[in-house]
Length: 119
Image 1 (cartoon, one colour):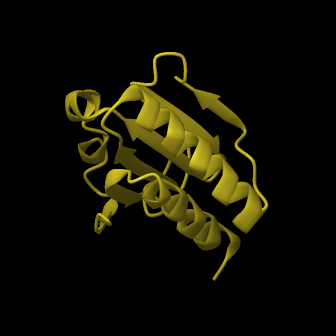
Image 2 (cartoon, rainbow, N blue to C red):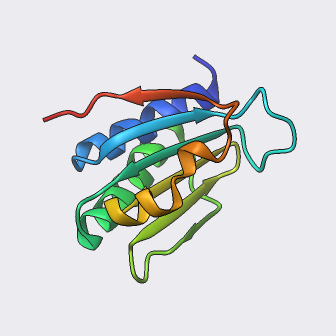
Image 3 (tube, rainbow, N blue to C red):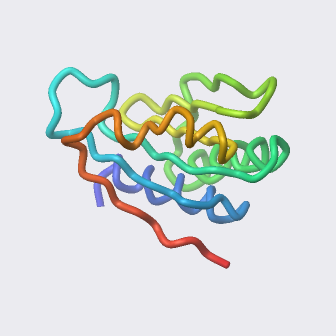
């Protein structure tokens, strides 16, 4: 498993640890001129759950892949938090905000992988 795949696995683990839902991994590697190679999109039900997911992702990525985010934006209102890991960007949404922006459909050519919810 390469570094990027390991990071994706650790990020996914961090999301699932805090019961993040509807995880989608968008593979942008076949699309030219994108800001990163992968988007990982998920949601939490409340701003505090969104914050908990972000903290969990930070921890699992640091411990399991030895990577820290370059930046994290959106924590103040925790409706949409973006975490920049260079090649991988993590987006943690509240459900209604996710629906509104619908990031999954921005790149029609991206390969989408849905990760089953853990309940």
